[in-house]
Length: 252
Image 1 (cartoon, rainbow, N blue to C red):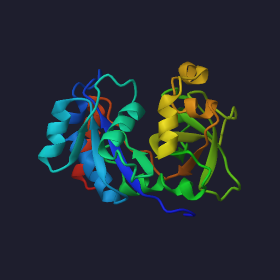
Image 2 (image 1 turned 90 degrees about the vertical axis):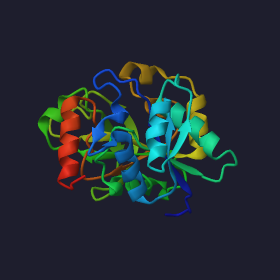
Image 3 (image 1 turned 180 degrees about the vertical axis):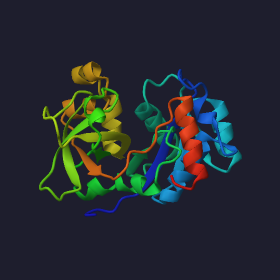
Image 4 (image 1 turned 60 degrees about the vertical axis):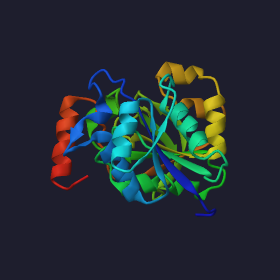
């Protein structure tokens, strides 16, 4: 990297989930799911890890295993807002210049995937980083639940490129791609996070229901690192069953 980073990893979590009630506390091999996510983040070994909690029950689960929990306003409209508040409470003096935001429903994520989100910060002009995987299954190309990242790469061998857009539609509008499945893990320069949460929601953000478009609409730069696998997001009982099976087999 061209500059030294001092990252902190923050996992936002709250209990309000409709398809899987009390999702962060769901048991996975004797511990709550949020603890499994915490462990994966610690294994990435890129900086201190804390959980930004919207509910005291989550904080209790985290501290019971020796983790760092920060209580935040339960009314935050997004995970980014929750992460921003937790960062200010944890580090009011600004020692940490880079923030990695990992969703609290990724108990099987490979720690190497987490570390990859720092790669685009090799370019100083980058405000925000994120991840994507090249789509190989045809059904994903047209699935509106799969967010597609439109990425400009310098050449065919590049693993990091600049985000031009994100959409639930099939973009670019070609049958066989390449198309890229966006993974909702983010890195922020600290100043960029401060700016992002202060911005009003953008028109494209509201149309696509994709928060990251707010940054692009306001001229912020997002770069994307390619990784090999999409981590399992746990949203349903079936997802929870899969996560338990994956961790039982030792294959995050």
